[in-house]
Length: 89
Image (cartoon, rainbow, N blue to C red; front, side):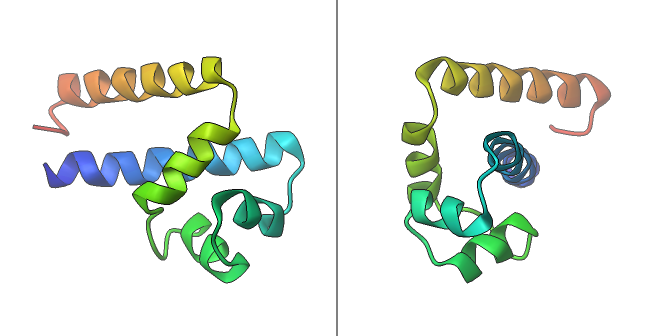
């Protein structure tokens, strides 16, 4: 189960970062959208801490529904690929 948690943490961090860059948002703007402090967002984006479930929910309600589905599909595909390589049990 821990492997899944780590995989999800990295996936979410990369997805949120990619969204921020795509939208041209500052780290401060993303912190506002996720209802966290800018320092907390910066630490999370750099992998010092993981995004909380509440921050993830705020992220998901910020993006279009189609993108939410796309993220879920991408994570499912990542899980399948990792399982095929034997990296995730």
